[in-house]
Image (cartoon, rainbow, N blue to C red; front, side, top):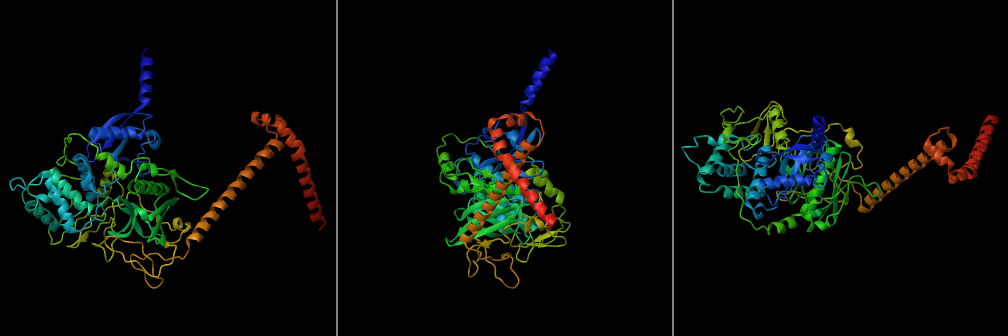
Length: 572
C-alpha cells in the first residue's frame, strides 16, 4: 500500500513543476504549473496576481541554456518551449511599449511601465543628454522618497541612488537641485507620469537592442520601437524607418534583412549579421510581432509571415495577440475602482539599487569631472538579473558623447569620462559576443547594406528626429554614417534573382528525390534483403508486373549498351 501511494505521488510530481516569475519590482511570484499548461495560463496567473487588466503590453521572458533570450509564446505548452529541466525561472517585462503612456487607462499599468523604463535607464537602454537624465532621476527620487526633507536627506543623498550605469558628481548635484526646488508637492503618481512623458519624448524610448554587425564588421544594435525600426551605433541613431515603410523582414541563418520603401520611389535593403542563427530568428520574430502590434488596425488583418523565399519558406510565424488599437479600445471599457498600488521603491533590488543600498560600490575621485567605471562582472550580473535584452554599448568616436581613456568603454580596466552637456549610460558588456569571423559574412548573397535598389543621385540628411538610411559616396574616405556602398539593381532584377534561386532549389530537391527513389528501386529488385516490408512489396501484382514488363527489359538494354561501349573502348 505504501509503495502504491508513493508511486502515485511520483506520477503527480511528473505532471507538475514549479515556475518562478521575477516581476518588475524584483519581487517573485511562484506557482505550480501543470506539464501540459500553455504560456497563456501562466501569463494570466501573473497578471491576476498583479491585478493588471491592461496586460497586452507585457510578456514573459526566459533565457535558454545557450544564454539566448526568448519571449514565452502563449499559444504553445511551456515545457515544449524550454530546453532545460524544471523548475523554471522567467521574468515579466514590457514587451510592447505604449506609444503614449499618458493614455493608459489605469495607474497600476502606468506604474509597471514606469518600473520597466526605470530599468531601461539603469541598464543603459534609454540614452539621453545630461539635462534629461537629471530630470528623469529627480522624478524617480520624488516618486520613491517624496518631498525633500533636510532632516531625512543629508548632503549628497542623491548619490545613494544608482539611476544609471555611471554618472558624475555634477549630475548628482543637479538631480538634487531639481528634486529640492521643482518637484515639491508632487505625488508618486504625478512624478511617475512626468517621468513617462519625459522618457517617451526620447529617441530611444522603447528600445530593446539586439547586438549585430553591419557588412563592414562594425558593431550595431537593432531595435523595434512603437514608432518604427531603428539602428544604433555607439550612442547615435543612424537609421529610422517608420512601420508603414517596412515592407518585409527576412532572415537566413545569421543574416537579417529589412526591406523598406522610402518616399514611394526608393526601395532599400538593410543587411545585418546576428551572433547566432538563434539570435537572428529571435530578432526576426520580435520584428514581426512589433510591426503587427503597432501597424495593423485589427488582429484579423495579421497574416502568417515566412522568413524566406517562394518555394522554401523557412520559418513561419504569426503574431496571435491583440494589436495596439484593439488594446486601447478594450482599455476604454474598463470600469472598476482603481486598485491599490504597492510601490516597492524602498525595497532592495538586485538590478536597480534603492536608497537602502547605501553609497555606490565604485570608488570615485573628487574631481571636477568624475569618471565612474562599472566592472565587467558587475555588468554581467546586472544583465543576468535584468531579463531584458542586451544593453547598448557605446562605440567611441569623434562625434560620440563618450570620450574613452585607456581601454575605454569596451569593458576594460580604463575609465570613461562624460562631457558636461551630454550623458550616455551605455558602458555595458554584451552577454552574447558577436562573431568576428569574416567567413560568416562572406557567404551572404547581399554584400552591402544598406543597399538601394534604385540609384540615388545624392544622400539624404540624417536629422535628429528622423534619421534615414544613407546612400554612400563612391570616393574617398567614408564617414561614420556612410559605411556601405550603393549597388544599382532594379526591383525587377531582384525579383528575377529570387525566382531563379527558388527554381534552382526546387530542381535540386527534385533530383534528390528521384535519386532516393532509384536507390529504393535497386534495393527492391536487386538486393537479397529479406525484410518483411520489402517482401510484401515484392509480392504485390503491381510490382511483379513492373519488374517483368519494364525493369527487366530496361536492365537488359542498359547491359547491352554498356557491353557495346566497353567493346569499342577495348578495340580502340
